Image 1: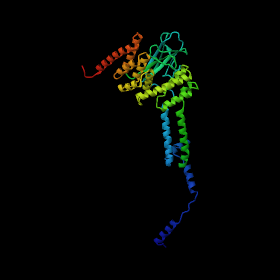
Image 2: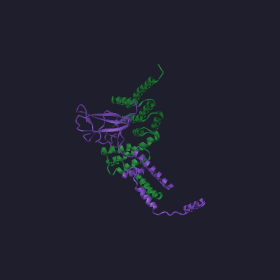
Image 3: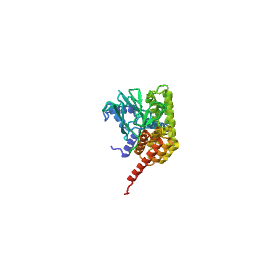
Image 4: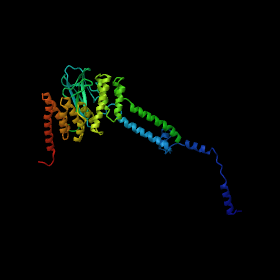
Length: 187
Length: 210
């Protein structure tokens, strides 16, 4: 009626040792099922992107690839540092800048510009304004310590040096300029 | 992944290197105001100065000054080149750690007639920035003071005088010259007065003395 225990175990073991045949398409079906499952962030593109960003990824690099990436990063850093000294408009006045008022008495002028190496010698940048009387023209410019050349351009064509400032000797351009030296603290 | 990265990264690196080189050679957009025939020469001078680690902003400003004053291209190039040479000489005399403001003032002093030796002596004399002493030296010479007199006075004051003292000294000289004093005599007198003032200020600031 009952088989001996050893026989039963032997039959079970024979059954378990038998190779299992798995459907070759199983992997594909399983992966399709997994892909079809709803993701925690939702099925939107944003959710998928978030899932991709928060999921760990493995990146393998050859030494050559690693060196290439490192070199590319070095170039980016170098370029960003070059940009800081690259050509471009002058940096805005720094914290140690102080405001300087330029004054000119010119009763017959209709328009006066202050030009100098603090505003790229650009006549459009610092127009002077009449202050109080009709004859008095003023402009205020913040300046960091340094030595500056400047002049007044009257009515777009006539150059005037500042009569109250040292004259800049200029045998190159001929037109007169003045000098303003802004010192550090205490000047 | 590896081969794909190599295929992607190498061309990317090459492109970045090319872009970097192009950026380094990019002409300052402000130089558009200089006429087209002159611009490449000025840009080359600016690039040379940058390669020599000299400040380039004074050169660009010199070119822009010429453009605003409607100087000819040859004159602009000559002015920029001369300033670049003076900046280089100033750096040689003052040292490689000199600030751009000091170099600009040093170039002005050299252009006015001061010798590189005077600049080097000023560097040894004064620990504070040299912008103001160098500028005062250049301004005095421009006012007609003989270089030797101006240099001797500035060197005597530079060790202890503040920037404000140097400005006051220069104003005193210019005032006396305007009133008719010979420039050398005006400088000597103002230097003596400034020295007395500086010494008095130093005595007042000395702590622990009655």
